[in-house]
Image (cartoon, rainbow, N blue to C red; front, side, top):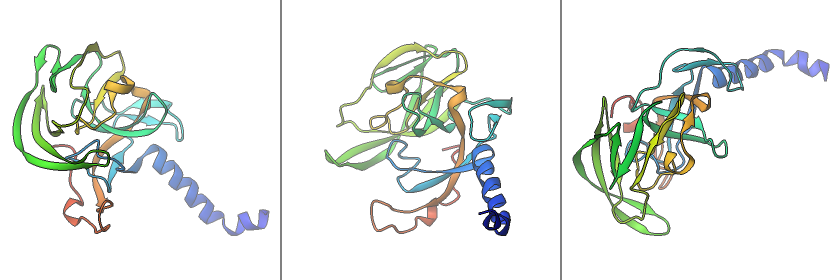
Length: 224
């Protein structure tokens, strides 16, 4: 055993350093579901900057230093406060914000977001088939990004008002009517944030013929 370790110590060191890099510096995250459509599609793989907000001890949620502050509109990965599953959503509200939704319209601190219609599309949901989808641009405070709504789906289009606790964030999926987010599991403590998703590394049509979607490679998630 010792001889095997000596013979492969370079490879073992590489694995250790690679593990530290992935858990403390940068990571990638495959997109398995439709909850972030239209900005992220099933089969996208996003680059995650783990140093965007905190320097953490590798393999832990312990922060050594803060490097930046999350902003409304950031797309982030985090551990679900419900069961620890890694999720990716958009920060809709910050600590101290009072948030509510009325008829799909987001209100933060009493100010209602404005919406621009971008166009129509479709989305297939296994139990329901092909459904109409409406693409909108949501302008909320300083953030602006695309969202999708599914008028034919029964969804939580009203909630709150709720006030976001200190050092916590309210997360929403861009696919508002097909996303399990803070409307389901509540706000997310900062300690559970993993990093900020910066852009798409690679993409393939995993629901079709697995063809690469080269037009999506390198797409930024900082402004949509």
